[in-house]
Each structure stands twice: as C-alpha cells, then as structure tokens.
Image 1 (cartoon, helix red, strand yellow):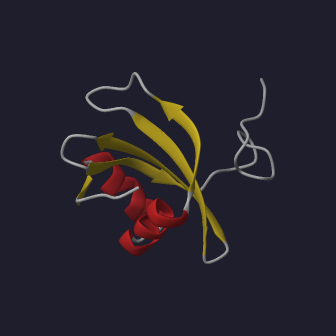
Image 2 (image 1 turned 135 degrees about the vertical axis):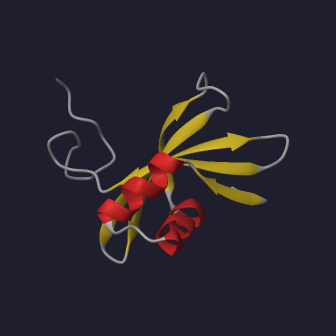
Amino acid sequence: MLCNVLKYAGHAIEFMAKRAIKEQEIEHAIQNGETIETYPDDKPFPSRLIYALVNGRPIHLVLGFDESSKACYIITAYEPNIEKFELDFKTRKRK
C-alpha cells in the first residue's frame, strides 16, 4: 500500500506511547505487514487490521485509507495478546 501521507489519530499516539510502539515500527508494518481483517464500512474511510512481526514483536494496527488522496490514518496500534488471538496473532479466538 502506498501512503502519500501518514496521519495519526490522538488515540493512536496515546496507545503507541503506552505500548512503546515507534513510528518506524508502524511504517514497517504498513510496508511489510499482512491485512488480516477488513472493515469496508468504517467511516470516514474503509479500514483494515494489519499484522506484522517487527523486530520479533507482533504488532497490530488499524489503518484507515483515503483512496482519493492516498492518505493513511493510523487509528490504533497495539501488541496482540493470546486471550483474543490464536498463537499466530492473526486469527481471532472464537468466543
């Protein structure tokens, strides 16, 4: 995915700071990560959940994408846990 501009929601910045996730890790996840879920009806832009292994650490980020401007919006970023995801960190556990 090619992002002409990368914008961070306040929520994302707060959670990245709490979780010690750096902007370089977010950029790596966007360039090298795998989309594991899509949310085409999200507003104001469709979004997706991206998984990436960054320096041996699993990272999830929710990214909104404005097709017209090619702007990427980081909505949140976190390290997934095995309470909600299988050991591959890609598959949600069934309730």
